[in-house]
Amino acid sequence: MDDPQWQKYLRPSTLFNAANFENYLEESRGSISPASSPPKPLELDFSEGET
Image (tube, rainbow, N blue to C red; front, side, top):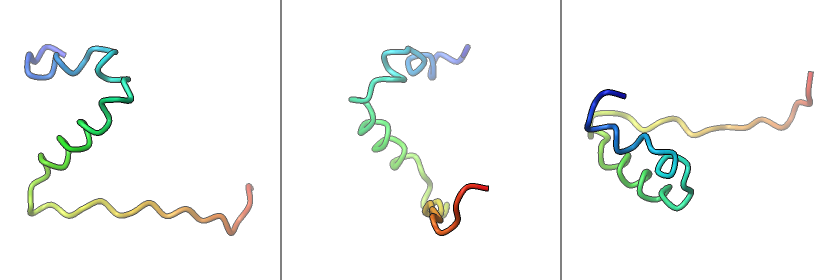
């Protein structure tokens, strides 16, 4: 919280504004190094009910 670089992102209007989602998504895509592997896709299993 004390880092000036990140303080601009800590405003509630910035953090929780749905209109900013695309911007966050594009920024995150640009910050991934080419050597890192992409995250595994989420797999949901609906074949079993609640236990």
